[in-house]
Image (cartoon, rainbow, N blue to C red; front, side, top):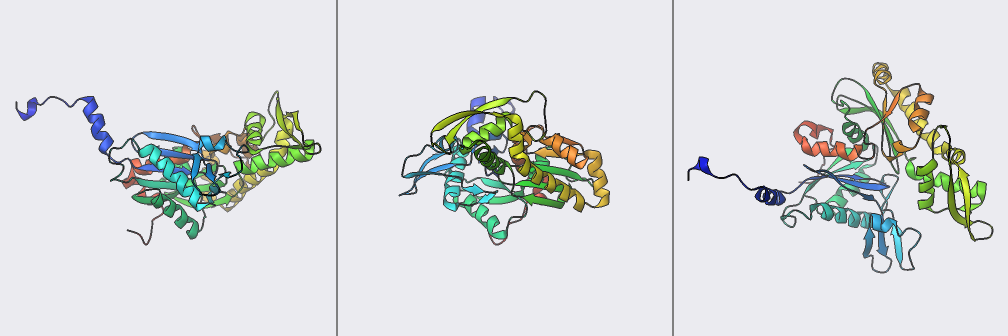
Length: 360
């Protein structure tokens, strides 16, 4: 048989060979959720950024969705923690264990996972300190990464939303996450001006808890407040607004109680954090150079992140700024998809990554 007569490789053999190839990953390490993108596969993991640990030994009991189900329900000796607060690492040990767990989950299919470590790109809020940068990198290395590159969330969100970030035209992206809201004007592959505020989805949940306690005398848990925000929360009036039943603990009697909350009341609860997000957008527009401001007026504002799903937030921002606003096609996955593009087209997009110094 000649070389040209060799039979084609079987599909099963190709799959086995592909499993030998280490897969680089991108991680959107968010305050509320962590998303993981695997090179060549896309988004493969989306779980809450929550860890349950034993108080005496520090051993991990559960991570992600399983840990979130335990919020408010754990016995003595087990604590449920969120390793990230306002977009940065608040509990390094818990963050390391969570990241290690997620990395192992997505690399477990590789036959060389024990000898070939993945390259990791991690998304971080704009404007964090060098110490916080180092904490993110150290957590990545501790989780088993071969190298750790960092990309700022506004740039990743713009890439993931399909904006032409390398062209000489301005694009304004608003990324409303769990812990931070990032607003940035991007042109020629860099951030021209931007604003980062630590007011986002978590602040909205806390605002709902405070408002329901003050108005109805009912104490709510985090999960209940989040559900109320998702189901009937809004930033702008909408037609045929519904109501929702909510259960909590009566502040006076201490007994369980169920009340009906109208959507308008939830909107009032959310007004303060929404106003701060709108103010961040307006502040960024005020700092934008005149030529780029004209581009933004033409192209409009792109809204990404989980907070972009709040009903009427795009209408509220458009009403307050006079600029058209559209929600990205996949607002929840925009940031990690943008970071994933840096893996798929590294030679083209490596210049948007924050370089690492002092490590080989």
